[in-house]
Every structure is written in C-alpha cells, then in structure tokens.
Amino acid sequence: MTRFTRFALALTAALSIILSWLFTPSDLPKGSSAGSLSSPSPSSSPWRAHLVRAADGDSFTARRADTGQTVELRLYGVDAPENGQPYGQASRRSLLAMTEGKILTVSPVENDRYGRVVAVVFAAGDETSVNERQLEQGMAWYYGRFCRAPFCKDWKTKEQRARAEHAGLWRDKRPEAPYEWRREHRLPR
Image 1 (spheres, one colour):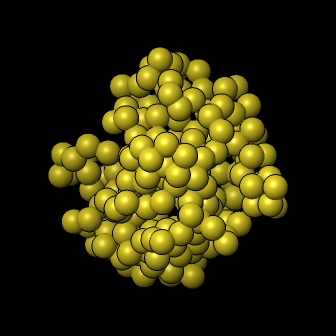
Image 2 (spheres, rainbow, N blue to C red):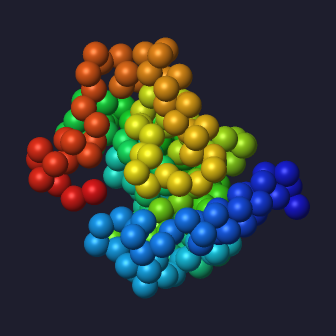
C-alpha cells in the first residue's frame, strides 16, 4: 500500500468519524435531510476515477475505475467562480490542469441536494488535495458554511494567504463570491 493510499484511507476514516459527530439535522445544507446523505455515505471508502469533463472550478464528472459508472462530483469545502463570472474559466482550467489524464482518488464526504458526491479529491502524484490547491492558487473561496472538518481551519488559512498574495481571483479589488453571484443571477448551486 503506497503512502498516498494510506493517507487517503486515514483521511476518509477521520472524516467519517468527524462528520458523523458534526452533522446533525440542523447542520445539513438547506433542503437536505439525513436520508439524503445516503449512498455514498461519509463512511464510503475512497475510490479511483478519471476525469470525464469539468463543469467549472469545483464541479466535474468522473468515471469510477472500479465500476465504470460516471459520477457527478463537487469539491468539498470550496466554492469556485461560476463560468459566467470573472475567473470562472480560469478556475475551470486550473481544475483541468490538476486532474486531466490523471488517476484521481475520491474520498466521499456526503451527497448534496443536487445528487452530486461532495468529496476531497487527490490527483496522482500530489499529496495535497485538488480542493486545497484551488484555494492556494486563488481559484476558489473557502466555503466555511459547509467545511466543518478539522483541516478546514488550514484551508481557511490557505485562502487568506492567497488573498494576501493577490493570487488568482484575489487580483481583483473586490471579487464577487460565487454564492452572491448565483443569488443575483438566480442560479442553483
């Protein structure tokens, strides 16, 4: 078993314990219920996949290596600009650069109300998650409203560092958060 695989398994186990403790019905995203967080559950084991297509900087379709099933995924704990938003295409290209043609290890956290698997995703050859890389490169916001695992504090720090360094979307004086942009344009998450 490689160091990366051991790390992914340990991360999944830790997330399972933490999320089962943290997520009570009042903590769930609006429109969700405990029953809607079923398959795959936070206790699901990590699985390998390949990118099929990227919708934007935090959502993509992947094909599971074990079953061949295509799965809609969303990166846990981050919110990337929408395609019609400034930096939306740059964020999508950043996601593609990290995932295209690589074996991905997907550690499911939950299912969202749109049926997507919300996950921490690692690309082969990188021990830092794609989620965290998007924050470091200034290609996504830290999504504190939904990021409740202990490592989320580190992710918030990564976003703050990217802001201070004017990385990616933080080059703009007042970048508009995707959740605000969606509200103005009445788009679902």
